[in-house]
Length: 303
Image: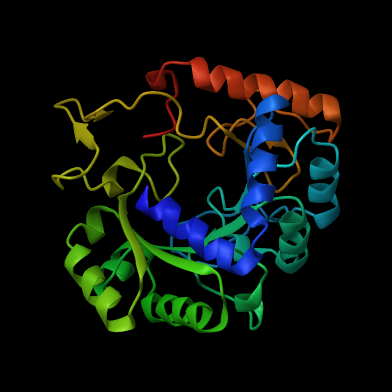
């Protein structure tokens, strides 16, 4: 609740006095039209991390601003929130990130970007974004090298500080705990103090059943007391506590190929739509209803 309130106050200051009214109107319209209140957008299939052992498409798809505009233009109700994120990728890898941000901001009340903070081109710190979320996998050079096979912690720190100094957006730094960075909470708190980071969070890495480099069982910090997972004698991973409902029930996902999906964790085996038409949004509305009504364990992707 505190995090949400802080975000809202920061955006209010940037967007102006009438921003809460627009926010309320959009939220109401989404409810009445039975449309998802949030849209997660993948700007590119590429990545800027350069991690050893991570496989990227030979020719990564890039979402064209015109495609995003086409989807948003036929929606019965504009989303309250648009969030740029990646599916084993990073938004900063997109050559069209500036145009995408301009297009998205026209159609939503809150625009955020989640990134690893590497490879940021000069000037991008001034994007018209309401919130930057920098997700780092480690807080020490040693653990960063163990996880990614390279040492770019300092580059990430410099990017975070550059954005904080040159943007009015809220900047949040998130440490994702993996097995190699299980002892990094104390160093992370030291970084927070040294660089005066106001908004921080610690989360645990998610299990990825598709077997990508990050999210494999051997990388999960299962020996940490706070880790949400446990492993039995058969090396089977399970949640310690089963949450109620889907955490992304109010969101849809538009991937870099311009395909609308229920969430970032589903592929072609799940329902998906490729044509930006108003009827497409109507069909997608049924996905939201299904996600709201399903039992949480029915989803094998989310922790």
